Amino acid sequence: MKVISDLNQTPLVDRSLAAVWHPCTQMKHHESLPLIAITRGKGPWLYDEQGNALLDCISSWWTNLFGHSNPRINQAIHVQLEKIEHVMLAGFTHPPVVELSEKLSALTGGNLGHVFYASDGASAVEIALKMSHHFWQLQNKPAKRKFVCLENGYHGETLGALAVTDVAIFREAYGSLLQDVFTVSSPDARKALAGENAQDVAKRAAHELEQLFEREHQHIAAMIVEPLVQCAGQMAMYSPEYLRLIRALCDRYDIHLIADEIAVGCGRSGKFFACEHAGIWPDFLTLSKGISGGYLPLSLSMTTDKIYQAFYSDQTKQGFLHSHSYTGNPLACAAALACLEIFEADRVLEKNLERANDLAKAFAWAKNDSRIESWRQQGMILAFDVKHSNLKNANIFPREMFSASLKEGVLIRPIGNTIYVMPPYILSTEETLQMGDAVQRALEQVLA
Ligand SMILES: *Cc1c(COP(=O)(O)O)cnc(C)c1O
Image 1 (tube, rainbow, N blue to C red):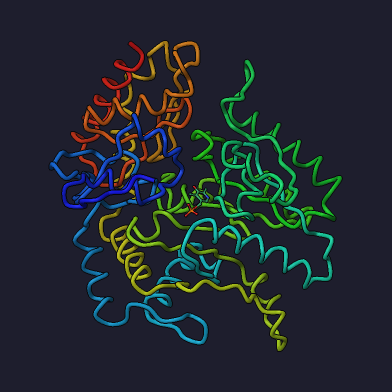
Image 2: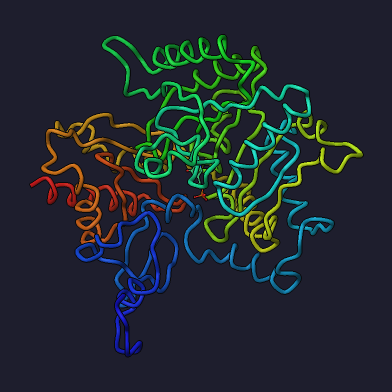
């Protein structure tokens, strides 16, 4: 370990590398890859110690909706801070958590009227998995205990969530700790064969699922999916037809459907919930990331009255006894409420239609570039793949592209050979075009 003797003389990034073990990082890569110390943010811009500005094109890991240091969200947190910063949610309640739950329930038309809170996304996924598992025990069907997930899906990295995740790099070292699951083909539209469209791929994938359900439904508790976009899975996008088909199959075989909207929820897909594109509701819906506007850790799992009622009893152990210390934190709920108010007051979903158009224009150059394939967009997510034949070294491409983009003043984090942007919902047309140009220049440098 490097011992730092004079903290005042040592750059913050070096102190960080000595003392902070950074997430999702091979720390040794920082010998060549810069670590960036951010000291302030405003709107879509992040500023380092020297005052250099960086356009946050990925919403700080898909969390930020309305910019950094947003005056309205700041104000809401300040106001709440003067009242109560935190109180346990077992045996107690408070205005922000009640209001937030009511508003979210209303956004589902009352279909998912019971909201259970946690702090991070993976925990919300685990809550849905545990509730489903427990529900079937309460129904005297304890054999229904296995989960179905999609190839290339991502649901977080705690052991339960990781078990239903199919991204090799996150799973490999921990395989022996994970429960067995059924993994079925992704309806990823990029798998379309000659003459097929995205709907055909969806039908094919759903047919495979039907065969699994037919054979194993007595052993299956729930199926979990990321609706429309498998974000960590290289922004794989698929037809809403798949969601309609699996909703019907889950109904037919008495299997819960868990929609993990942690990344695609909160307007990211073009509607508030991605499931709305398919006109379906799941049995469980998870949210995190954008729900607090990227301000504070908050996650939740919403469910139906049917599930809720199954746990309602005189028996303590028939209840859902799961808990986290910061469950339903008032400051985080106040931030979330401020976000929902912005959605309404600023007609965000409507305006995002224009912003999504801007996004498409800003990256129009990539559509016609022969080195690029699978240009795709779902609302405020735009992605494309650099053909492997154009990459000198696919392993280091994401890091090279990250570094080249930094020099152009934009923050992006490619996944494999996929370049994507997922900006906050506040970019001006000009900033959006600036982003597209900067990414293009960075890509030219890397591919040169
Ligand atoms: C990020 C993410 C998670 C995990 O959320 P954390 O807060 O990182 O634990 C789960 N599911 C999806 C779809 C995600 O994108």
